Image (cartoon, rainbow, N blue to C red; front, side, top):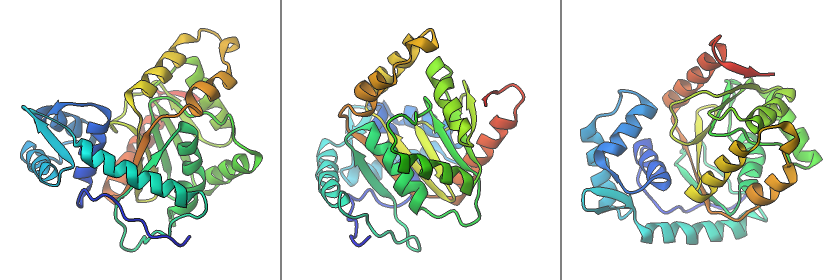
Length: 284
């Protein structure tokens, strides 16, 4: 791992990253709407004035643009991010970046399909980002991710990841596919719950003190929701169809990794509480 990542800057602090994540999923939004989403995700530790100040800074940095009373991501900044991600893909095929964990700064990533994002989770996120105290690892996702399409090497890597620390899967969806994919993960050692509301605004993964959030385009989210909701029996689950239409289909999926020990612990405790709640629907 020998390359140094140079990222389109959005300044420091997870509040900026969180606002960018929200506007990547929904737009345009007013300052009040953004504040409401942040408050739902992170609790009462943020004020409307702080959100308004952060939005003003993002506008000045040309990351966000204001249209009337609403905000959305700046298209020029998105283009710069795409140029960065395209060059990163070329480098990434041959070698992985060296990450300075001692002076860690947020990392922005881009994937051209769901499958590549999943491979990154296995090989690079859980395989690279440290969790020396073996704290519980957490996945909050709209729908449980499948293990379909993994090679034997990747399958063994997933098993080892689940052996290194306790892993929780908290899925908002509770369709047949959610339950089946969760059952597959549970067979590998993951502790799975389906049909639960949670605070993170997008698919979120906690490894040690590091948090990875993935932002899916609206069209892809709609297709996933539609496919998951359309099945009424296990016989209808066509994994190859899912692989072709969802996992391997080309979409621009963006992600951000940042370090925040307090937020990571809050998410971790939220997942543990959900799993221990007798009303939660566990999948084993």
